Length: 267
Image (cartoon, rainbow, N blue to C red; front, top):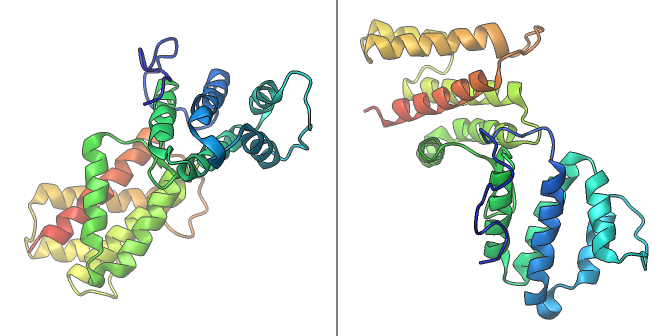
């Protein structure tokens, strides 16, 4: 384990929520660099300061100075401080791949994720080197369970839509409308496949469920509300401006995922 933020993971930077998704605070940029330099001595010939310096500079689109006056680390700190915020996440992912070659991916990820949490970033760095939006543990478990259910071959179209929704939800910045529309489309696909009604809309499938008393009325009401949210706010071809709040987006996303699980697990 590295020595980055081991004593107090949020000392000095205590956000209320993991909701920073449109910027990278200045201190966080420098702490990312500190992680890289802390691990460099453990890399041996697998990764050198020279490679880190030129790799980051060129990723940022900067013509690297061969011998900066104050040294490579100072120059990197300055250029990371000036970079567009989304490029910092690109640098973090690139560094993950470099430290993986040196056998230090897990230590690198642990330290980076401590920094992301300390600054309230909306993502964690996953084992694949890509970012995943932070959700409560129970919600993360629901997402994983839904993917597992949709791996049933009959739900292949729904799984493709679900993965598209997950990609949009995890994007930087989050593609809110796509996340909502794709996850709802995944739910609609599951409903049509489950009840063998390929030509129906979700509303028609929901009416079939209600008319045949397949679920409790409270659940039918919830499905009705989801369908109304889609019709009013993020249906395909709608010209109205998308204006759901972040909390409402989370509600739609997780509610659709819960509904997918409900349908796939009902016999």
